[in-house]
Image 1 (cartoon, rainbow, N blue to C red):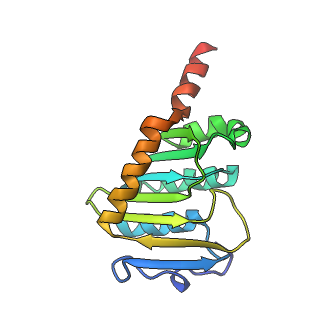
Image 2: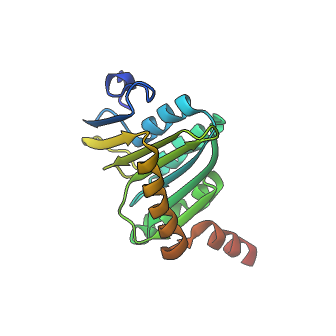
Length: 173
């Protein structure tokens, strides 16, 4: 989030506004994830992106340190692997399960221990940019279930498990 920017300027609490959208350069997807977790508490997260930056992984490290993330699952694109490989050790220490697939989607799913759900479909990669980005946010259970089923299919049938490859590589040394 830009300095001096207040997330409430762009988003209302989920309980008040179950469907909302924004278009701004003031919010980062990490800000939205933190905002959701503050409202839902302990949750499992699924996130997809074309690419990821060290800055986002570092931010995620501190978000997870808050204790609100039970499990974090990440799907990144195979074509952006050169950048991902340089972050491989850091990603595998921060993210529970990382997968590589033919993926250009930018989706964030959060499911709380209490069963509350949030779906975010955004234009932003897991990188820091100062361009206008958009997102649609919903607490609709049917939307969540539909998108989650599609992400599960992508993970199960069309991806390579980065964490498993990393552990095998470390074990080989």
